[in-house]
Image (cartoon, rainbow, N blue to C red; front, side, top):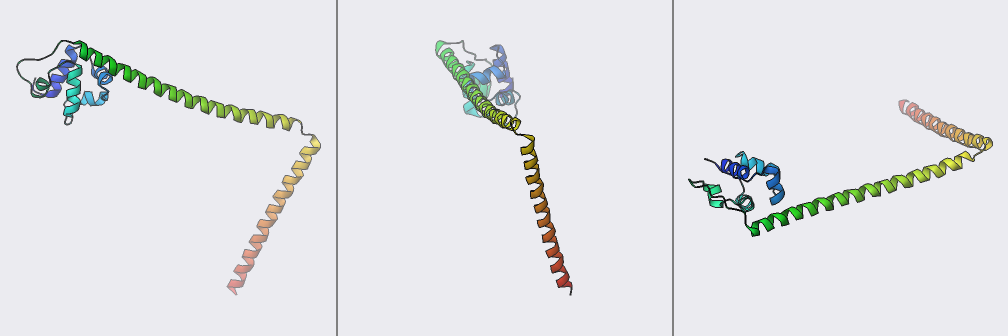
Length: 167
């Protein structure tokens, strides 16, 4: 095994793990672990040391290689650290899910409020008489007519100014 990536891949496989499981235990992104395994980019020694401790592989062997593969048996301290890391990850994941759920609930409450307001408006519209509808139509029509007249007046004034400028 000539590279860090080959040794890392070998050690991870011997432990029955994969990049995703190592990622969960170390809180190092799975893509980063995969890149180290594939010899992509320059590995961060601090992250590699963290990985070596979690998977119980001698850090010096992982970095420098050698004839003797030094893979340690699990011991309680490392198992406890793995469990702590996994519990921290699970807690973070649950907190994120709870936060997302709270946001969804807030959005749903907002939508519900909007729908309640819409229902109230619809109820009040059902109580309008035909005479009131005609009055509203007249007002809207009158306002539209006045707005049109105002536009025409503005256009006439612009034309008048243009005519004066041409003289």
